[in-house]
Length: 432
Image (tube, rainbow, N blue to C red; front, side):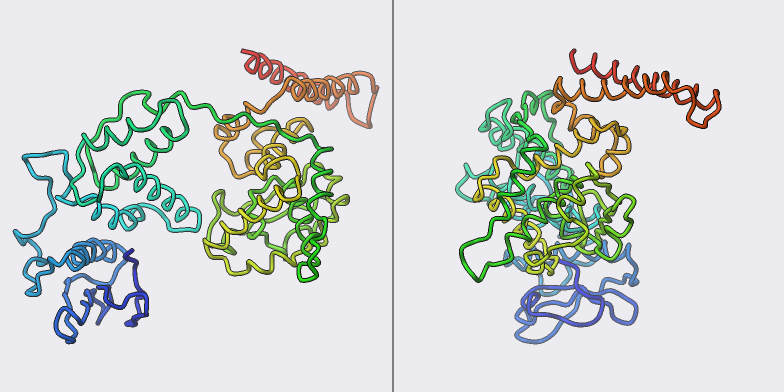
């Protein structure tokens, strides 16, 4: 894939044989591969000052040039690439509005990454998301022998029709196609409700007792002497994920210099700069329940296994997450990595914490948090929260004073009553 090169006038082994952009005297130009001119170095001057905006414009021109090089259509006179050239192909052919810039699907897939990141910040998470979209789009058109055809509505219709309605595959296909087609300004109207009907697989979340039992299983040492110590490390990793509701790969983004320092709450700091980006960004997370900090000895990190993943590459993040899931299966823990995160969200509500606080700690918007975890609420969870708030109300009513004035006690009682009303409304919503 084409990538922005360093603004220093250097090349590296990954760009040999490829065109690239460089800054020369404060202006941008495209450095052309030597093989196009029998070993002689040539440049395509762009007449653009070296600014962030102009780098984006230069990358668009680089796409055009590199595409022609790859398909043996490069104009060595460079006239085709001058502004206003009639040879430039930038518009949809009037006879077929279902084609985009006269590109084949193969060319579109080659251009997809740069177009995708024109309007997005490139981080580890956004790169992971792009990789998924690219894999899906590549897969859905596999009914063709090759991708040397111009994309039309007929092909898109067929790609969608080959997936079953109401399945995750249909939902995933439509989602990735929307992103892909938007990058190329392809005018395709998705039918209303075409991706609806899919229901995520029901999860039976583990109880806190089962999580503690799983923690004991996962840290059982491997028989091999070369792996001695990894068991304790895996135990600590699982404990942190369960106690702080992290995604597995976010363990690699823990800021150890700041985390677990305040004995009053043992808060944890996620620093996305450590791994070059996380899905939910940098944030502070609090342990739930607090007692697990001591039970699992979390303030004393066991990072022996994590030390193997100090290089924060995308491959390492994915590899670590896969390895954690594999370890849980191998040790027959009995549930999946993300069950720990989901259980953290439900546990927080059972302990009486507000949804907006939990959403903030988990890096969600309030809407996203509510929609994600509403389906995991059980009747038992609602009963726990409701009884806890009733108990709090009764406590306030029976204690004559707590060195508080009557008005202060009345305020606390009013807040408790309001909270109970909120829970009653939530319970009605759940039952409906």
